Amino acid sequence: MEQEIEYFDVYDSSKQKTGKILPRKGSFLHAGEYQLIVLALIERPDHKFLITRRSLDKKWAAGDWEVTGGGVRAGETSRDGILREVHEETGLDLRNAEGRLIYTYSNVDLKRGDNYFVDIYHFRAEFTEKDISLQSSEAIGFQIVPFAEITRLSGSGHFLHYTRILEAFAAEGYRV
Image 1 (cartoon, rainbow, N blue to C red):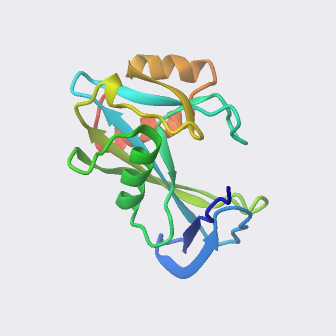
Image 2: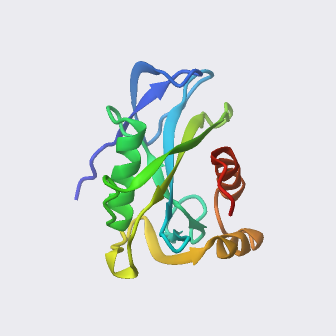
Image 3: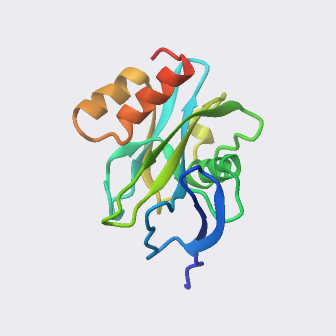
């Protein structure tokens, strides 16, 4: 089965689209060029969060725990990208959930051509384990946990983006 090629918009250092579009696989970004990544902190009313365990065939951080997210596709807004990623990877439809962008950071790795902005969203939604339908190519498991469990997993070195999540919550004025 032939896999569809995914493309992304290239952004400048001011997080504005440049008009350049590149394929996700194999692209090398130069100084001043960025792609856009999105992450979702999905919280239930009982203050528990959805986390997923990365597929074991992932090139980077296989088997580690994380919050749902991924790359924004060409032509998508940041919000469109996070809603699509969450729906694809977990089956949750957050279009009508309370949620907003709470934090953005950037990373520059000129040696690897891996420059990106990351937009972190915080959603609050009512859902149960039965509502989750994982995309097997992305995740092999999930948990709905209090933030203390995320802290514990981070301490063992198996939770991604922990420091950035703390920064995002601090920027939002949210206490975990």
